[in-house]
Image (cartoon, rainbow, N blue to C red):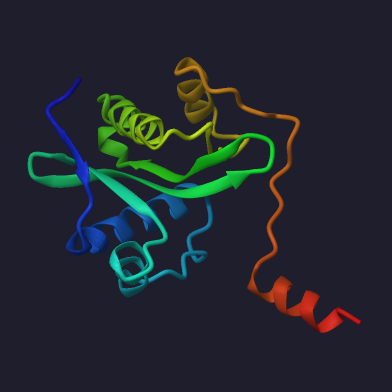
Length: 161
């Protein structure tokens, strides 16, 4: 592996984490989709009600990657962890940083005793799909992701009779 360190994120890392989130959004052709703020990340990750756990990857003292996970519950399996994002800067791809982050996420899930770790990957992101499959992940190509966004929630509520 390369010359980097994986550690638990701190509240003052959230500015850099948000930069990485925006970098991912741009890569995924969703430049204007990110609404979360540094303040949101600090409150939700380090406040009274912790909603997620975040790992960061440092290389030469700079955060070059992150992985954000949160607990879920499967009615079929029991406790699970959802990997919301695993992000590595473009310049660090291929360095082993993504593997190190994924290793940390899997070790974290194992430590918690979860029955599954799940995440999504865009169907056109073949490098990521190949990476995950090479690690033993089962990419469920026959499942569709379903979202109800904020406007969709409002519309739904307004149409309940």
